[in-house]
Length: 584
View 1 (cartoon, rainbow, N blue to C red):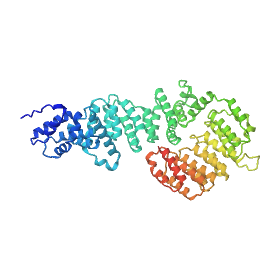
View 2 (cartoon, rainbow, N blue to C red):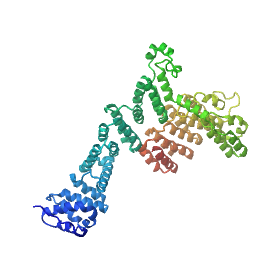
View 3 (cartoon, helix red, strand yellow):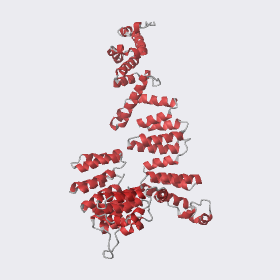
View 4 (cartoon, one colour):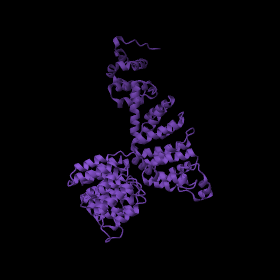
């Protein structure tokens, strides 16, 4: 027999609430159904009977337990108890409809996804995820797919670490290529966990290869492989493009420029080493390549089959981009020499601080332009600099000539340590020689493969701390991020001489050498030496160096950071703070 429910008089839910106390199940179900419809306006009254509603859900013999759970969830939602509201919403099962657009459903979905993300982000609790919670998230994905909200599905998949749903969203989308590009960008910019980001990038690379209907975006694939430190994979793609048609070759050059802007030389050297032209391929058509005028821009580099690869390698090595950058800076140089002359005139020459500031001002104004007119016109004025001011003035030339890879040593020749001659002619000041070695590092920063032997020999052949100081800084810049074992051995030898001046630069130089690599063994060696030495300069240099080794390592750097910030030495704790900034 159907139960007729009267319309609520005077806008009150009291009649329906009294029906909850009845013994007949039909009356209770009818009351629950009606209350569920008016809960948004009468929740304050219903809240007084929440214990009765909860008791109905707890009763295993009650036929409409899920309806009671849904009503209890809505009551707790209006009371602001979102944890209890989500718990009862999950208990409501299929009655909790994720397709509704009400504020209650949206709030519960947000809370459910946040809870699911938290559980998925915690390895120890991942196996304990409530299956009802998983079911709600699954239904949310189905809703996204049904409404063609594929980007939203990709975002939720990345947040919840569901790579299976990421693949499903890309495969179901009408434009897989566009969806993959969006997923790649979102992964690189929004995913905070380094470990999961690398897993996602591997999955994206695989999807680029396997998803039907997705045109391979070689630039995005190479960027993914770059983040994965997969030099071999990048080399294979670049090799296939550069040996292809003209459009593919141009794309290879574009990717090469992009890699040069975003990666350090250790990775680029690995890629370049695998792009060495095959000798046999060039021998068969060498004459044809010499006679062909089709690709005139590549002809000077070599024969036709070898020229594209040689040009690509020049892009990866930095030879071509740096040359173009130098040409641009020189042609667009608008610095005001008259302003510099006025500053020089206004500054008293005896004031060493202002003298040094003027020299550095010139270096920064002409950085990378190769314009050293002011220095050549004021040699007598410059010669008044002494000691470390002279070191900085000489190093400033490296800032001006940054990128002059082929002529750097010639430009700095008059100031560099003279090989094997101790008595032939007057030698420059050690501060000048040290500054010149530092300048060489600035000139060849991140492109120092050819200058490393000279800098190594300069550091070995002198026991003067100032010269070793300049050599270590130059070596760190020239071998930036390469982890070169020979360079590390030499700088660590200088560090262990326990000279304050040379040791400080050795610590910083080692940090530059190991930037972004984070080798635990070497980090321990440096940290142990910090505890042995009594020189604050060395501790400071090593602390800054350790911070540099953590560059970009994110959560992988946590053990080092934890050890440094808990150290008893305040300088090492200061380095720990720098390491946090460097890691992220």
